Length: 338
Ligand SMILES: Nc1ncnc2c1ncn2[C@@H]1O[C@H](COP(=O)(O)OP(=O)(O)OP(=O)(O)O)[C@@H](O)[C@H]1O
Image (cartoon, rainbow, N blue to C red; front, side, top):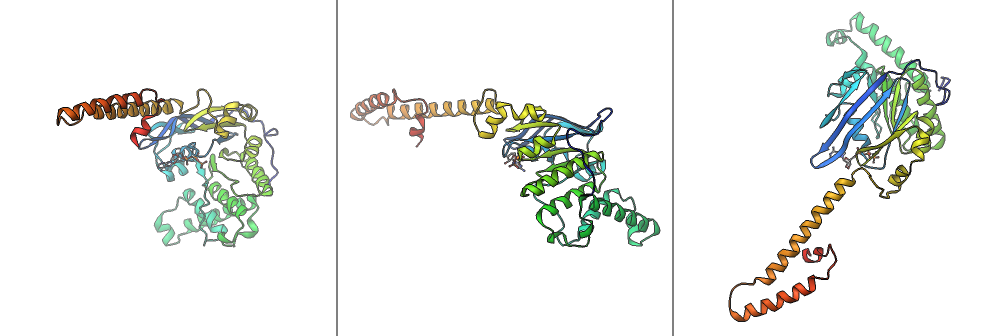
């Protein structure tokens, strides 16, 4: 990379930070599953914000709600004060770009062409202008190429502009995805696991690249599982657990919070998000088991009315069943179900 970067501590002083992204009460349900519940998150200009959480916590779903891939079941997302339209290309148009957890490059196109694809939202020339290659289109095309080459220089891949994307090493493919996202001139970039599969040197380079992106005036929201990377990089970190925001704070605060440690180690803790739901499900299961146990007892106690002898046997059976059932521990209904 050719740009001199700053770090978290040497970030340029931003006179006043304006909210770039403001997500309020975002909830996303898939049928009976609530993947994201009532999440608020703000990203200000000049900031790098991290979003962490165990697998399945709802991080990517939240990203998808921010970028118009999903329409949130509830809540509102604003970019620079304006409510975002629920269409991904309109969100890109508005100024939010993203990368994906699984690299999504056009593998048989060149490195330069991949960046140019990302630039098309900023090209205002119409279809006829393009088809007839009118002067206006040629000028716009030349400008797009200049900008794409600048971005390739910025990420250190200009010398590979003519290579096919599929021939780049993995770490460079991830960088190329970032360049393509930057080609739409965003005010905010969302990075979904930018260092996944990278070796330590590539991870360090990615960190520098993200600081450089912030320094060029693009706010960053990043999902990552690599905690060292995230705590070193981010001004603020929000933690999602089971779809809910557990807490938000600076790196120091978050990494020393025992609830975060417990969430990652899978240990329950008092007031954990989703605890109420778990309690409800457990209560419903216990009630169902109790009802099943009672039904089984009643069935044994009320046999077919087919004669005095059978009635006597049934009474005996019933007594035995009751005697067997009485000392069983709660939850023993499972044996009855079986
Ligand atoms: N389209 C979908 N339909 C149904 N359920 C979904 C859908 N997308 C995600 N989910 C569910 O929502 C929950 C949150 O998933 P999500 O991928 O957002 O988590 P994550 O925090 O990004 O996980 P990871 O760190 O493993 O990528 C999971 O239980 C997942 O199975």
